[in-house]
Amino acid sequence: MTYFKNCLLALLSVLLMLSGASHAERIKDLVSIEGVRSNQLIGTGLVVGLDGSGDQTTQTPFTVQSVINMLTQLGVTLPAGSSLQLKNVAAVMVTASLPAFARPGQAIDVTVSSMGNAKSLRGGTLLMTPLKGGDGQVYAIAQGNVLVGGVGASSSGGASSVQVNHLSVGRISAGASVERAVPTELGQGEYLHLELTITDFSTTRRVVDAINARAGAGVAVAVDGRLIRVRAPATADERVTFLSQIENLEINPAPTSAKVIVNARTGSIVMNQSVMVDACAVAHGNLTVVINSEPVVSQPSPFATRGDTVVSERATVDIRSDKSGLTMVTPSVSLGDVVKSLNAIGATPLDLLAILQAMKAAGALRAELEII
Image 1 (tube, rainbow, N blue to C red):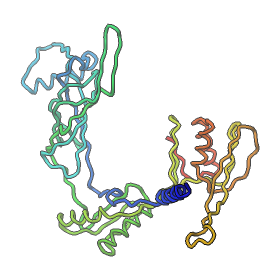
Image 2 (image 1 turned 60 degrees about the vertical axis):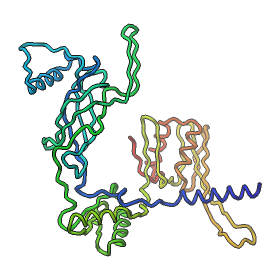
Image 3 (image 1 turned 90 degrees about the vertical axis):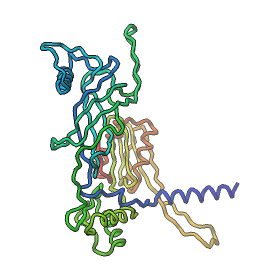
Image 4 (image 1 turned 90 degrees about the horizontal axis):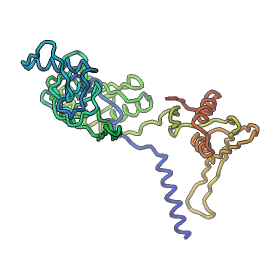
């Protein structure tokens, strides 16, 4: 039994050390290349072939107008003053993302969304729809069968209805063909610019050092806390090879700044490992929160040949529901201990939000507090 307990303690120690260690990440997961980006496309179209679940044309005149325009382009002329009563047609918005370096003929996915009062797009077919970019030019043409990941049922007599998932939005895999390419250049002149996904001076410095260690001193230069200028080869083929080498380099990102995210609607509280609480005592209503931290000394056994004396902190959080007075506490207690203790006694999300705001205002919460 003693051997088992010793093995268990050793395993826990290893897990604690691993949890505290930072994990290396590839540069390609931390940065993007300036100018290499996707472009959003949009268009309006018609979905036909619906089983009576289309738009009610008396309430969606744009659906009738779209049908008339389509028939006119196909050489079909309707009698003047004719009133169309359609049930199997729905007007939709079609959206897609044109990836970088896309070439004519390449297929991309599209999303089809009803913009009228259609009950369902299930079983429908999207007719040829031009997709335009922000400059008004057509970059792709979409058409195909709409796949809707939902099920609906209704009973008019009993006035009952059952619906699973969303029926007014569908997707067409490889449903659009690229007709025009967007020019994308890998940098201007002899330089490339890498942009970090977040602004962090320490991480930027580590990326620059990793690139210079691989490609040579002075190849990468930090412009600011987010932008890195890299001197790259002249030809496109050499630049692709160069980028493939540096994007797989691994670095240890710097710890992020302390931050607490509070969702006031759901009561969710998310914090990172850098959040700490300074010396404070909290009283909220009839709740008194006392936060304490005391040193714990761990020493090796007598006559041991290995091991060092380690001093750590053990946090204690005492919460009372009476009208006790406030107590001065020591700093550097994890906020996680406070939140867990408040949840254990049934504190409401509004209580947690009010306490965190008061701790931030008092300067005891050493983190950025963001309420969403």
